[in-house]
Length: 278
Image 1 (tube, rainbow, N blue to C red):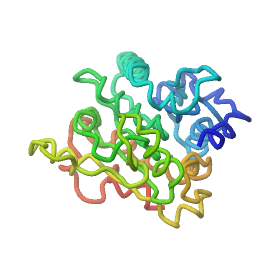
Image 2 (image 1 turned 180 degrees about the vertical axis):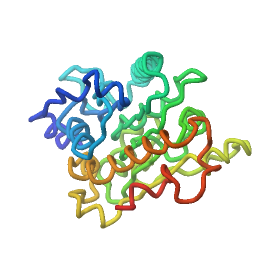
Image 3 (image 1 turned 90 degrees about the horizontal axis):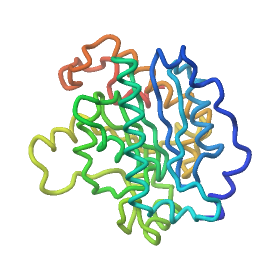
Image 4 (image 1 turned 180 degrees about the horizontal axis):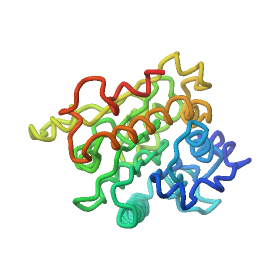
């Protein structure tokens, strides 16, 4: 795992030009990397969004410890540090929403960053919901209670997972643990399941705001072969994730921001089938 992760650290592409004032006027996307920190994987996600026509400002935020001698496993399990970084990102989102009220805000997290994205949502204060969160192969346990995070989204949380992610999210998290300290397969490999003991309100949140997309062979046509790093493939991001983000931006422009998706007619913009409807 560690050796494979270190390979992706080289050859970082620039995200220059993706956080201009004109883009900030249109919306804001925060991309959280995996345990490797900022690398060509997350800059590929950022560039893929731009390639796909997302007009928002895109910022890659490195939540990891940031020391070259710290292993990816330690980044994954530094719970106190990671929670603190999640609060910092939540503050950035609140600052943006105070400056640009009503603009769409998206949060995208890959691998360990998917777990941090959930904690960012939990850290948002009441009255500061984002448009949507997108988790790519999240290294968090399938039974993690998402209800507090789901409450901080207008259009829900999308989990992209792959059963072929064996080395990292089956074997790796069984041995090293998930970001929330559980040992076993991660939600990025098997999807989320509804935990026991939820209230009827929280069960409804799961039903209406958790949208899960498993890996399909159709994605291979966009350069994603089902492995852990395929979700960050620039072409896949442009052809799948950018479509989802743009669809939700259109939905937010056409519907009242406080209108729940459950009240909208079937097939309306922002429906969970959007990423697969290529």
